[in-house]
Length: 251
Image 1: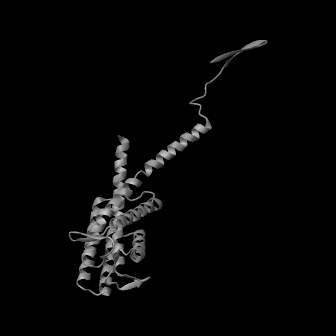
Image 2: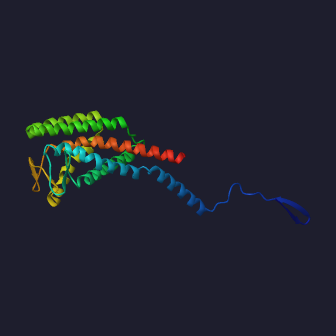
């Protein structure tokens, strides 16, 4: 665009240049940046809900089956809400409690992965299955030794040594060892108020008493060995959820 400007004693032709690019106000730019940031955040965390539901469902279904390895030899006896399906002795609240256990531990591990690593480890189905088989064999061995009347001290020594070996074989990280140790201590203690106030189960051959409730000392190793399986399960379910989400986005 040209403008003709006249002034005595000469005439000047002035060219007005257009601004390059769209003229966006600062407010509009800020809104666009916020929308892009929210879009990236929602996409990056899209795995949380499906992974949480999958973990809870796994604990709801698989948890009582694994727990049944101990209840069938009367290591733990269920009281209020107890029922039996074939050889499985359990409690109506056990699926919900184990679903919450799977979900809590799994999400905790995944959040720690995001915080402690720039590239969080991805799950692997083969490793998940191997850790599950190791857990089943460990629980079965502990149940058979209990059924055979092996001394609590001897069984504890054997299971503690085997638990360390399984951690070294399946995980081999100090973070995993720390989480497994904390769960081994915290979970038996968490059973105390459940037994004391709700009377859902008890241990008939308890060898230690805390706050008036009997526990079996070597059950800490069972929670310890449970941890590598839950870590691998959570990572694998997250990988599946992310892969499914990426496929949906590309469509």
